[in-house]
Image (cartoon, rainbow, N blue to C red; front, side, top):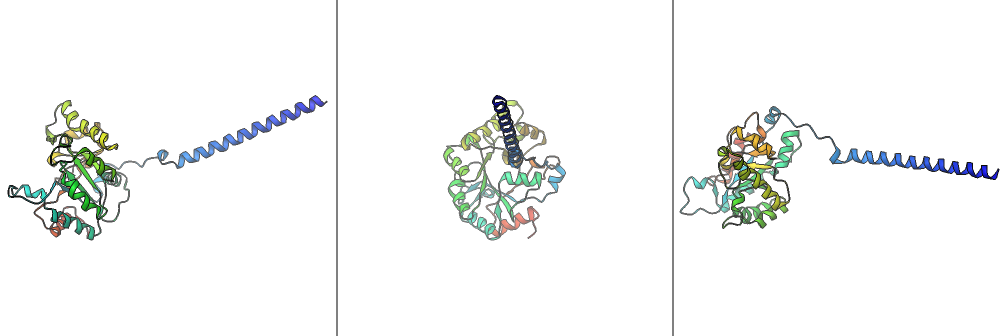
Length: 286
C-alpha cells in the first residue's frame, strides 16, 4: 500500500512539474513574441512611394558649396561662382539660422521622399563637393555655431593631398555627425562611364573606401559637374547607391531619387541674394 501511495505521489509531482514547465515555456514564448513584435528590427517597413508620389512631395532646399576662401587676383569671373569668400559664407549661414532653418541629412530626406516621414521645421541641406580642406577648416567650425550638419561629397583620389582633406579629417567629420558620401574617384564625367572598369573605379571603389574610413554606409552619390544620364542610374542601383544628387536641371519623373536637385551657393551673391534665390529655386512659401 505504501509503495502504491509513493508511486501516486511521484506521478503527481511529475505531472505538476511538467505542467509548470509548460506554463513557463508558454509565458516565455509569449514574452519573446511580444518583444520581437515591438522590436524595430521586426517591424514591417513602410512601403516605398512610387515615383509620382515622390515627385509630388515638396522639394527640400539643398545648397552646394565648393571652395570657401577669399578671392585672389588669379580667380576668373566664372570661378568666383563656386568660390565663396569667408565672411560671405558666414553671412549666408547666419541668415539661414536667423530665418529658422534646420539642416537635415540624406537619410532623413530619403525617408521623407519614400515614406512621408516628418522633417523639422524649415528643413534644408548643406552639401560640399570636391574635398577642399577649407570645408573642414572654415565651414565646419562655422556650422557648429548653429548646430548645423552637412554632407561632404568627396573625391577619394584627393585624400591627403595638399589643399584637400585628410582621411583623419573626413573621419572626424563623420564621427561628429556629418555624412560622408561619394563624388567619384577623380571627378570623371558620369556620362562617360562605359565599361565595368569605369563603374568599379568611379563608384564601387570610392564607396568602399569611404565606408572603410568612416565605418558607416556610403549610400549616396553626387554627379561630377551635376551632369547625369538616365542610362547610368541602373548601374548606381546595382552598386548600392540609394539616391543621387545633381545640380539645377529638372528631375527625371521616373527616377526622382537619382536626380535630386541642388543649388550652387554663388560667391557673387550677397547673403540676402542667396536666400532669395533659394526661396525662388525651390518654390518655398515664406
